[in-house]
Length: 139
Ligand SMILES: [Zn+2]
Ligand SMILES: [Zn+2]
Image 1 (tube, rainbow, N blue to C red):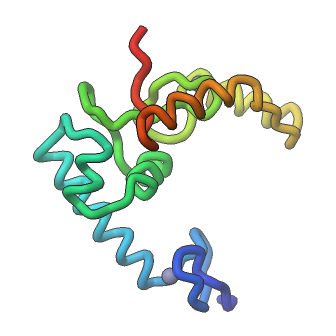
Image 2 (cartoon, rainbow, N blue to C red; image 1 turned 120 degrees about the vertical axis):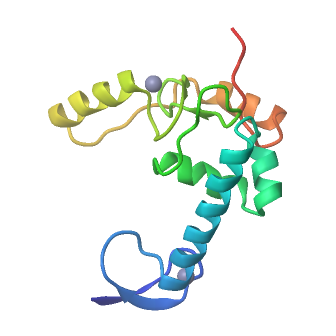
């Protein structure tokens, strides 16, 4: 156990491994997570913003739950995540299946040197239009 600052609230706490978050924040996260999960069970078609407002949980946090793979987006749900690499819509995590396979391969070949700046401007554009939310591009 080592003393560390909580990544959320900045308080010192005894770090035991895993995410550098104090017990208080961890518990709060858990409560928020349960709220979001429960809400999605009742309103599977809710958008990120609706969930955020109804549960009083920030969009960033909901996105993080998705990215961490704790929440899974069901068929027809409006919670949309994009693969951080190719922008394809995914249900959970950070990358689509193809990209995670690709990444695994790259990872084992070379460690480090990421260059994904390619189509960033595109994504940023759709982000601003959606008011911080990202929607599926219809195609
Ligand atoms: Zn904390
Ligand atoms: Zn991808």
